[in-house]
Image (cartoon, rainbow, N blue to C red; front, side, top):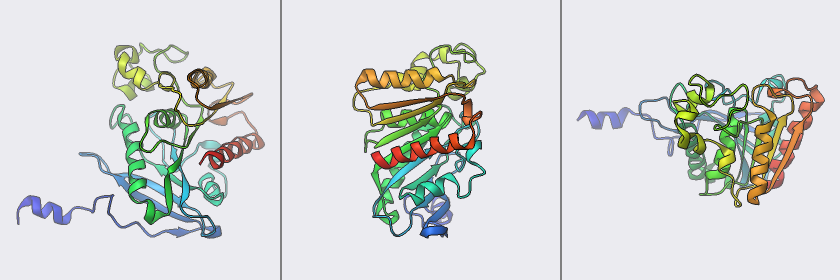
Amino acid sequence: MTPAELLGLIAAPHPDAAPLPPAAGRAGGIRVLRGVPYGLVDGGRPLELDLWLPGPEAASPVPVVLFAHGGAWRRGRRDDMGARTRPWEPGPFERIAAAGLAVACVDYRLSGEANFPAPLEDLRTALRWLGIRADELGVDPRRTVVWGESAGGHLASLLALTHTDPPLAGAVVWYGPADLTTARPPFDPAAPDTMEALLLGAAPAAVPELAVAASPVRQAHADAPPFLVLHGEDDVMVPVSHGQDLAAALRAAGAPVELRTVPGANHGWTGLDEDGVEQIFTTSLEFALKVG
């Protein structure tokens, strides 16, 4: 047996055909599959997702929420919707599944592993995997709503604006960076050590074409799916002008968008009381149910 034949024998099955892990049951018949491989990266770690599937009363196939976590493209966990939702029981993804939507919470390569467009390509790979396994999972990838917070909101915007096969049904963007080309304090596009520079592999001003490709405001077009953009008015990390400019670019292109700026809210919805955070989540879930 040759080394290549032996490697083929002992290697783990490809994610396109690998058996799904056992599902853990939750209230209402919801099932959770954790650590499901969805993609392979040459020389890198396998990409995984957690999958929340609604109970048996949901009409199959069900729409999908593809969730992209935050963390400045540098850190973060796929099962984390932000600090304000961490104490919730049931958690946000279980709540989405209880409403009748499947949820795929995905890993993507961080900036210490690969530069842009790698994380966006990973989200595309997750969509591809969901399409391949759709019948088995009982999901409809043609009714996918991408939902992201912070850096994940940036990637969610780009995915909704650039993925066409199949096109997405909608996008929920929580305080996501929308422009990597323009100085907005504390961001300086000429600085080589910002999180944006680490994402691109160089200061945005030094790689202007890549910075444009990574800026959702520069990708808006008339055929974009419906967007819900929510942004805190007191955000000191990603200024509210990002959300405002993204909404303005979408409107100017003739695309459907709803913008909600939130008074008193800083990044991650800090500064809001619990009722305020609950309302933002409910608004986002209602939007996903409407467009999905």
